[in-house]
Length: 104
Image (cartoon, rainbow, N blue to C red; front, side, top):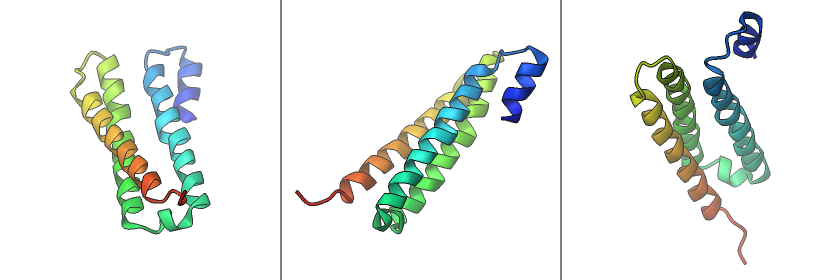
C-alpha cells in the first residue's frame, strides 16, 4: 500500500505494472493458497507445502523488483528469472492440489 500511496502522491506511475504484480502475485495468489491450505489441512502439513511457500515467496521477491528494473530500462533478466520461479511455485501448487484431491 505504501508503494501505491507514494506513486499517487508523487504523480509518478511509471512502476505501476510492478506494483500491480506485487498485489496480484504477492497478495491475491498467496491469499488463495492460504484459503486452499486452510480448507485442506493435510495439504498444508506436507513438506511440499513448505517448499511451495518458499518458492512462491522467492518468486515474488525476485519478480517484482525485476519488473521495476525492466521498467527503468535496466534489463529484463531479473523479471524473467522471477517469473520462472513464480511459474515453478504455481506448478508445485498444482501438484499439491492433485495429490490432495478427494477420491472420486
